[in-house]
Length: 474
Image (tube, rainbow, N blue to C red):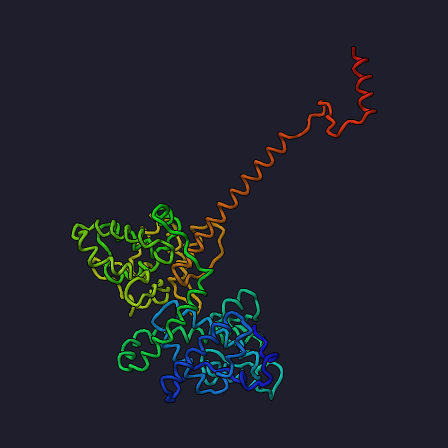
């Protein structure tokens, strides 16, 4: 993390730890809003990447009002884009950690209390526990239900458990705050995404500001996805990956399409960006969708070209706003406002939520297994849904030896599966190569009965010895 104290002498810059629970009541001109948005985008990108150049953008944080306005402006910019929301949450968390390190005990304590870490008499969930020092503003530890713990603290055994309560000491307060902050920001972004279009329609200046900032955001999103490339999905390996690596939600949608029922709007909206993210080229995507749509006798070549080809190109960023589409996260897929329960001949959303148990079991049994996990009891930790835990268990069942990791996005399942089989192939190739080397070594063992051949140039004395040798043999 950045050491800003070496760059700026004034600790006033990062002296507070805001968690942005309240909307600021301020009025700024459109030009200032654009400047604030650009500055915060640059700041978040540099802080997220541990770039020392972030120090040049820190004056934005001097003024609490400007800081809050720039944060809420980016909420409007990112809330209706899943990839942008993830980027913002990660970047704001990085900035929160930076400010926490520079804040006093009083400010750290105030931030925790804003996120409902309050005395027991004021709240039923978590409570302060002053174990050692009294009279200090910052408690020594906090006690809370162990189910509310960040998974990292629980996995690393950095807390004390007793009768269902976990005691976390002062040095580990930051993960608690980060978990609450991420959860809050994720929730408000999801809710804002449902109303942002109406907001922008009513405010032309705000819409122009958001449109002005979007290209800069897209540049950061493209650069941040360098390590999240697709899995080289092509028509040549589509069937293999469909059976071995596709997550259950993608298998559910593809199977429905192949049964000749063809996906309705929400199903297509869910599957198109996932295939694009997996690496399926546009021309092959058009060919695949054309073939699948024509399974339905009511769809003709002309109707496909006129009704569906445009939306496929739109998902690849070649139509409309020319912005590539990204797959919906598990939380968005489970949201009943985004993906209501399918009715009649429809398929969309998460199959663990949408399908009856018998249909879900049959789907899993036909496509790689994992149906046995449906009988296991699920107690999801805070911040995760039971469907995400079931999906993670299906992954473990299909990929023996893999670590448990709660699923948060379909591409997470697909990328992990692709990496699993790639490592398996690499291991087999390495073992085969080692076996070949061993065989070569065994075949190259020198024969002790075979006379040794001198490969060095012969000296005159050696020539004389050879002459004597041959004379003796004669």
